[in-house]
Image (cartoon, rainbow, N blue to C red; front, side, top):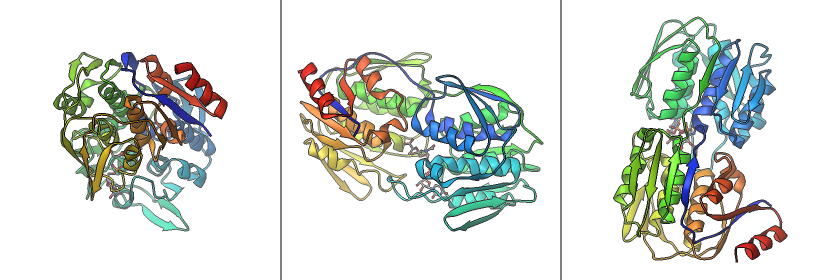
Length: 430
Ligand code: EPZ
């Protein structure tokens, strides 16, 4: 079984390049199905979630050519089916974006119902509410969701909760609907804006993305484009916390500092120095971190996708911190793993109460999901001695070359798949 083996203790120092945003890329890839002309997408991260979505797109007839590791050319003129096989949706929930894009273009789509995910219950009622408001007949049966319409007509849609997925899905379904659509209480995440910008570059007419009211005027068709995906806010934030937890000095490159403001603000409260440049940001942590309180919120609040990483860092801080999760109810499953390392954390309802300790020690750990897996790696980098992290497939869903990037900053980490490789690493780093 593949696992990461880590020896803690080194401060991370150096420069790291951040990839394109996975969660923007998932929406953009699905949206590329909406034109018969070729689309070139640049700055695509090479992570497994993206590669699964590409396979799902190929399975219905899209032709995807890899121009280089981070650039694809997509032609969707020969799409022969609007039914997406369940194997893809089982692997990645975001293949439900094909529902919005196929419905928007072909007025029909069918995908398997996304299953429960290990960060909590993830309903799709707001997606279906939006599709219905545009005139689609939405049916759920035999574990599948289908949506079809004679024609889609713009409407006024008020989302009951702020949801990234439903905002993106409804936006895609509405861009070629007749007339005007307004999405109120829309999500404002940078990746929502990126998908809107991408659709606009294909000829859509979307205004207001990044605010809580998005206005869409339907157009007849979309055309080809070349588009570069924004940098990944969460990958950048993860490396910022990697610098903080290891008392390091890291320059995070190829980023948009504005997207990282909530993360920078917390790191400053915790005693780090942050220097901002146009497209990079330096995090310097020279002393023990201080406690803070944080609540996850939709953008521009502190992201839920950074919650495990901040808890890992606070577990080594001075004082008592309370971290409240307000987006997903089951996102503290990694806490038991941190406890194995000697962290002092108690989960009460949707809050983790973290009593900082002076040191944590290496242990055998398992990644319960993507971001929690990354947080365990960060904890291991700051722990005394060796740790192993199993189930790295979760981490590889969203982080490109994670061990290699950490290694380039001086971390002692290796991906191994046999006992011999594990022993060899231990002998090498001593
Ligand atoms: C996106 O998930 C991200 N995934 C998640 O990142 C991220 O954690 C999340 O947004 C929040 O920022 C992708 O972009 C592919 P939501 P999504 O719809 O769209 C409730 C990662 O680690 N809700 O914004 O599925 C829902 O239960 C992943 O990269 C409804 O009630 O999240 C949650 O409480 C994990 N009804 C809240 O809204 C709905 O129809 C926000 O969910 C939809 C959502």
